[in-house]
Amino acid sequence: MISKKYRRNSVAICLVLALGGAYAILHRPADAVVNEVQASTSASGGGGTAKTSASSPAAPDFSGIVARYGPAVVHIGVKEAASIDENGQSTSGGEALGSGFIISQDGYILTNNHVVDGASSVSVKLTDGREFHARVIGKDKTTDVAVVKIDASNLPTVRIGNPDNSKVGEWVVAIGSPYGFDSTVTSGIISAKSRSFSDDSPIPFIQTDVPVNPGNSGGPLFNLNGEVIGINSMIYSRTGGFQGLSFAIPIDAAMHVKDQLVSTGHVTRGRIGVGVQPLGADKAKALGLDSNSGAFVGSVDPDGPAQAAGLRAGDVIISVNGKHIGSPTELIGQIAQLSPGSDASVGVWRSGAERKLPMVIGAQQSPERAETAPRQQRQQQSGPRLGVAVRPLSDDEQQQAQLPGGLMVQQATGPAAAAGIRTGDIIVAVDGELIRSVEQLRDMIAQANDSVSITVVRDGEQASVEVPLS
Image (cartoon, rainbow, N blue to C red):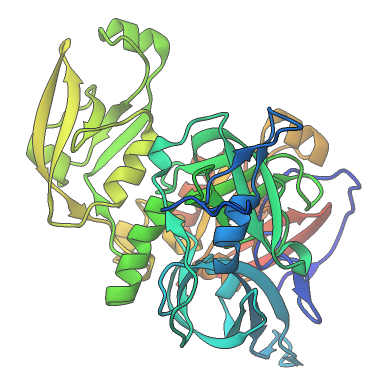
């Protein structure tokens, strides 16, 4: 639990917020964490694509998509178990709401991890009014994907699309339960692709301007063909509500996680052992490339798969298994989806020419295993010890928060989450020392002993929390 001390600041801070668990009822406060045919409603029969309205040619008619696939979108209710606080007092469990969508007729449903995380029971309500108890088949914090199952048959299902075929500027549609209003339909466009909130995130988020709010989390994002291309997961906001920036997990990444959760109950991810960075226009020109797409290799792990395959610092990775790589985020996402031990062909640009390097994909270390790794290994990467993904504050954020330094928490897991640190908190000090950079935080956590005192600012208030590290 975080104990409050201290000062107030009325200026709102820009936060990344998870959507699903953010709409809560009863005892649970709002979660601030960082949410084949084509059918129509015409008498002639049916499809699932959007039509252009006769009265407004520029605006698509989404009624066909809603009629065909709306029944496959579900309302998810979550009950949390009672817990004991730091003073030994019992706290009653809360209830929260989210969304999900049916991907198989026998009852498998996709949603967000943060919708069902910590649940003592999960219920699913269909649009026809039927309600079922649901089992959590598996969940993955890294991608924020979870799979739940209900015992039913002949259920309506969505159609899965390919996010790679989507383009910035295209119309998209969300269906979900914002603030508990079931089957709410909103629309907008794809604003950007391959957004990332941390350097090592395996998810290249789809950014949209579709109005989504707390309770939308876990719901589907449809293209105009009625295909699901993403799971609505987060918003970027200064108020806690929608302000034009929403983010969805690409459905291909989510389905990859789903397949592993259903078959094994856990997720493995590939790695090749490189440190990469964006390729600037000047560097691309100097290397003889026509564009600055790709991932510039700044370092190579001497014991990793890339080193064994002959990859060098200074190479530019431009493809994986023939698929174009436009940025480091895309590279991380593509490699993460490859199975450890599988063969891959990595296209690199070196000395003015492209070459293919055969490579055997390695395995990422899971957070659970990282927690039990030797101390020397953990000191090389402080994230698993503390369990946060952070980024520097922008100049505007720093000015609005009236802080001399600090790092925005984009994801909190492990010890940090257990101690009460949330996405959207600003870490301002460790053991009383002001934090000004990610590298400083990493070094301090690596050198710490068994615990640290973390000072954060949340909603204009300063608080301190003791975080055990081992």
